[in-house]
Length: 183
Ligand SMILES: [Zn+2]
Ligand SMILES: [Zn+2]
Ligand SMILES: [Zn+2]
Image (cartoon, protein in one colour):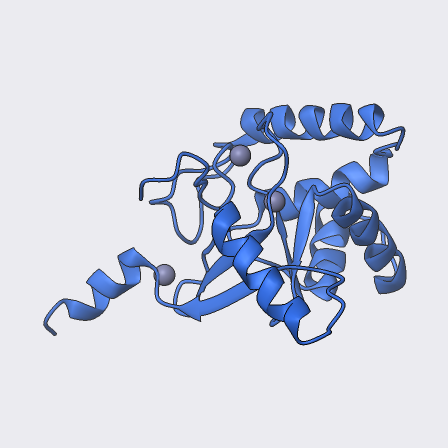
């Protein structure tokens, strides 16, 4: 991987090797740092990361894999002992999405934290590499040249492009190796 803009799923929170369950409380400090940064990003944009929104973001950040709004509502209830309607979870997720703190995978209708919350560069059009085996997701910025060509190609058809996000399903490197191991 040559691009310096490559970030693995939740780089500030866990390492790429960690799939599945993480040790209890191991990454708490990191999560709080990311949350503080998220709060600052919102403030810069004149938006407010309320306590509820912050807790929703925390649920998404602490998950080892992307979550549906229903799963987020369940985990919120388990963690904070308060029930939120799925509608209000969706509303808060939309807020987080508009501020580029979370992304929605359109092929699975699941949410995951942006890999670039702690970065200083502008957010790029993402391509998501989704492992169908371990459910890990890599958020990779699309190279400008490819993006321009792609947009030009689409606009040639007379289509007006509104949103750009690419999602690819397959096997991550670790799962490919696991697959190749003899039984
Ligand atoms: Zn992102
Ligand atoms: Zn970044
Ligand atoms: Zn995998």
